[in-house]
Image (cartoon, rainbow over all chains, first blue to last red; front, side, top):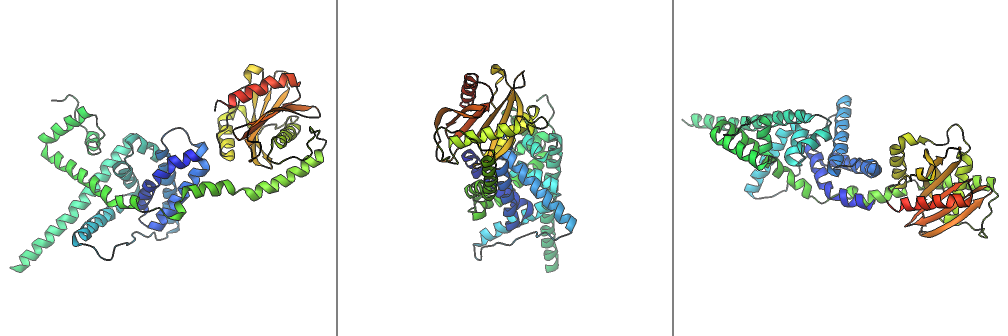
Length: 176
Length: 257
């Protein structure tokens, strides 16, 4: 089990990051990671040869999907955002924080399957082939979901900046 | 000019920096000629950067205590304790009932020791080898599954020795209960239907390394030994002269893990 500790422990931060990006809520995300790790401990000797990281992400992703399905079936409200802000901070840091929050909110509006692909590829650095394996879909589907996710997120970001420009224009015209 | 047309997939691979250097250069040249596409690709690159930086702090947070992996591993190893003791008690009753052990002067059997393992092997032989219906739970045809199962329960990789050179084929195996917890049992037979049983499990603190010693109970004979904290006992009804080279072969193969 020592090899497991050596191989799995360094990956826990990335698992938390993925879980949090997916479910947004800190405690729920960590519950998922804990569940994932417990399963990994139990199945360590059953895993096939291959990338440990992809294996762990597979377990985690499947747990998350199951949870989504269950809460959808129950019609339970899933907490979307957890506000966890420092009380004070420099204005610039605050602004940046708002920008990050904004992009994460927009990410949350993507369909689940597109969001998962984008996170695996763009944030977790999984190869397209590994992402396909984790999600149990063909590589072609990974590519098309990635493309749609990027387009959509791009439009969301563009759309909101258009709105800002619009507001400025309105203000200016009101000044006249 | 490049020969292969630039695809949408190329653009994403460019953003994710996973293209071969040559192709990367092709895409860069293409983007130079197509400012509209370049703008889109730049937006994707920004987006990628934004997502990474927005999510980076999560990976830097200190891990909460419930995600302590070493503790999880420890707890898992300890969990089946109560069950183990219940099984152990039953097994002791069983062995007591079966009785008749002729031990080499040692009446006190240390539960984690080699002698206990030899007794367990003989008990397993007496129960499972004469069984005509289900001597093994997982057949040799599913040996990969068998290996996974017992390795998982023993918390260590277990290899099934190949005894074909000695004239014995693997029939399959199962998990048996011993006082020390789950133990792997493998059964072999030869062309005459004579069967061998091999038991293996981690040893307790005593008898971590023990030389090969002959054991017998009635007409069930065999050899037991321990290497690097793992104990083995091979038993059957063949003559000790026939069993010893097979035991040596098992030991040799186990050392190759």
